[in-house]
Structure formats: C-alpha cells, structure tokens
Image (cartoon, rainbow, N blue to C red; front, side):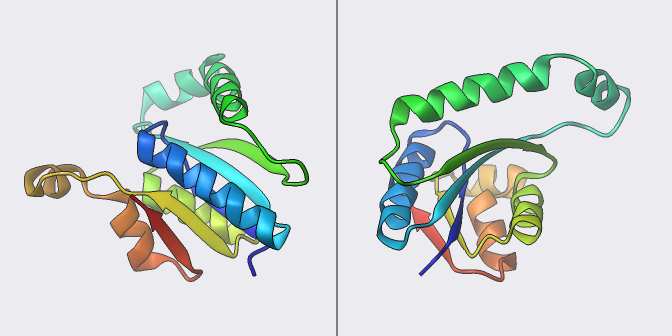
Length: 137
C-alpha cells in the first residue's frame, strides 16, 4: 500500500476528483498526500522577476485555501506545494525528491490538435513514471 501519494493539481474538475480519490486511498493505507500544482514559467528575465515577487506566496495561499475547502479526513496528512517547470517533468522530479510511491492525476479530454500543440501531462507522467499511476477521469 502507498505511503506517500502525489496528486498533480491544476484546479480542474478532474484534478478535484483526483484529490478526493487520493484522500480515500490515503485513508485506507495511512498515507500522506502531497498536493502539488505546477507553475509554468519561461526561462528569462520574467522568471527572476516572478521569483522576487509575492506572486508565488499568493498563489500557494490560494491553493491551500482551495484544497482545505475540498476537505480532508481526520488522520490523513495533506501537504500542499507549488513547483515550477514543465508539468510532467516537475511532478516527476517531485516524486524522486520526496519518496512518493504512488501518483494520482486527473485526465482532461483534449482534441488531437490540442494534444499535439501542448501535450498531455497525464500521458507524459504515465510514460515516464517509475511508480504506480492512477489516472482519474
């Protein structure tokens, strides 16, 4: 049974369902849930400016409030974090650095053109993860 569950969270309906599923899984296995949102930033001058402002703290505070509003069963520790980079790569880096042994991620249907242009985080994570992955629709 998993002990450290990562939920990739982007605020979408499927991400909310993924979070609720992860809570149920964690309650059964006495696991910790890591809710992580990825902030995509370009490499350049804007990145430094963004890091030096209160934008990250403001976004993290809003994320914590949103997760708290979704609820948390007693006895299930939940940690909320914000990372930056490409969503799939950032989530997989978090897995490697935090002893995550299960990933729960939502899947949003996109057309073929949208998948080709921007890719799919769930597909990227499924292709590269070295731990079990549950995709919630």
